[in-house]
Length: 75
Image (cartoon, rainbow, N blue to C red):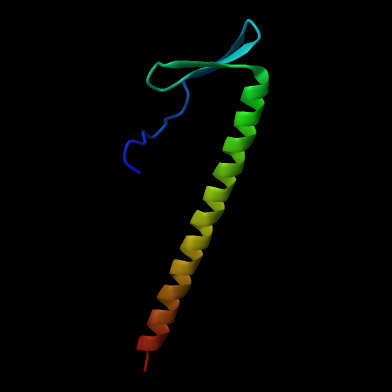
């Protein structure tokens, strides 16, 4: 994923003049409407959930593979 910059935790999130503002870890500020903020929050939450589930499933599959390899080696 060349050109993709990891995003750290936001330093600050606040409401001003009817907009949601997010200050990123590097000091950049992003402004969005409340509707966009809600939609973005839901979208990020869904993607985060899917990613976390995939991590757990991958670890589970790796653990099962390790057990299978070990049992193949036992006399």
